[in-house]
Image 1 (cartoon, helix red, strand yellow):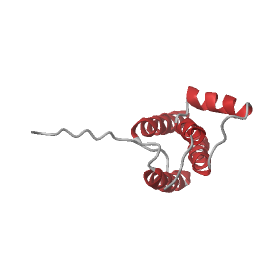
Image 2 (cartoon, rainbow, N blue to C red):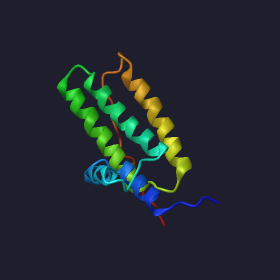
Image 3 (cartoon, rainbow, N blue to C red):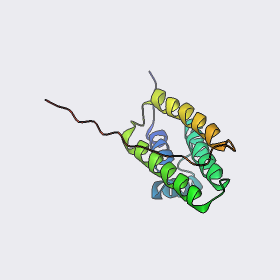
Length: 122
């Protein structure tokens, strides 16, 4: 089995929360307390890649829409995904990389997102 110490879990949680938690994580990193793992760096790189791709789109409206969707998706996954589920996180990284490659295409103008709500009937 794998032994995971608290500092790795702390820094893993920082990589998925791209708001104030990431700022706190960076502050702790400056103090030498937390370093980002390889997977965390991949998540952060993917997020930045989406923001860069958004900047390359022609209209301000498209850029804003992309930034909003990306931010929402990353925040939602940070709350839904178990931080210890490395296989699923790796899957999401691969999926995100494919989506980013599609978004970088000059033919792609924008992205959209849908929310699927399932109800359980008893």
